[in-house]
Length: 296
Image 1 (cartoon, helix red, strand yellow):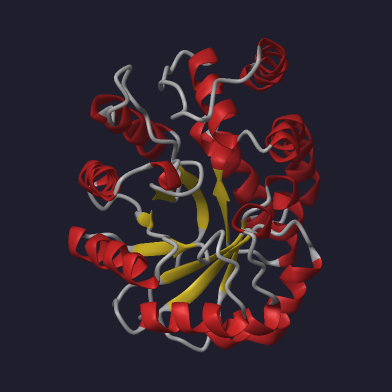
Image 2 (tube, one colour; image 1 turned 90 degrees about the vertical axis):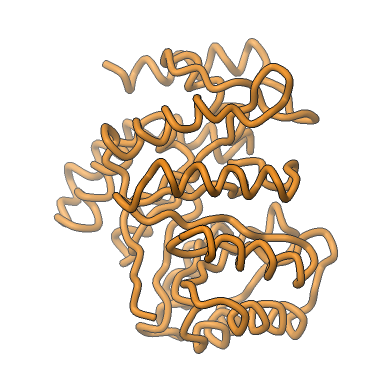
């Protein structure tokens, strides 16, 4: 198990038709744009931004199949396979492996608030059930579960568990995970407003909702900060992106803002699945003003 992911991974939205079905045409067009024109380093379907929790198993499989087929191995496809029950997480992950995914991204079981022992056993069982790299996803604000660095270090001992998307918003986590885990796990930024800081600290990549709208700018920030170590130019671009990143992080409307943003940019992608609704007129206007500064 030597696959290493790095760079900007666009965690894609799922487009729905007016009658609330998966819009395959829009999804394939979006994937081509991200890979062929946006030059992203990887694709993550059926993550949080992909509204996985509001989709059936059949829909999740459909989106994964489309993404893997459309990307055609040009970049890695890491499929979100989280579920509350361990058996369902395994089933989804095994499907992703058979479908040809390059890895899976798994947030801990949400809502049920598993303790550390239960989280460990959940991932241990998953690691023993598939032969794919596993990206841990720590997002306590959404899942209600916070995987602290000592637990991450224990999980990193499994060969399959190779990366973590760290979304707690606590910058000290990055240093502590690196200190405890060494080379056993690579960190991906999961907090947009800390992307610059995480890159400078040594994060290997960014799971980026904004890459749906501005893949090239996200890739450029990664290249400047993480690869070239050009702090001055990276900071200039980061400050340019910061109003958008801040709007994402402070409102939590990743799905709503991304889909509205794509419409504003002339790449319509449908509405969120209810109960989520499009942003208010005020939020749309604020978003439009921010996007205008990035398009010029």
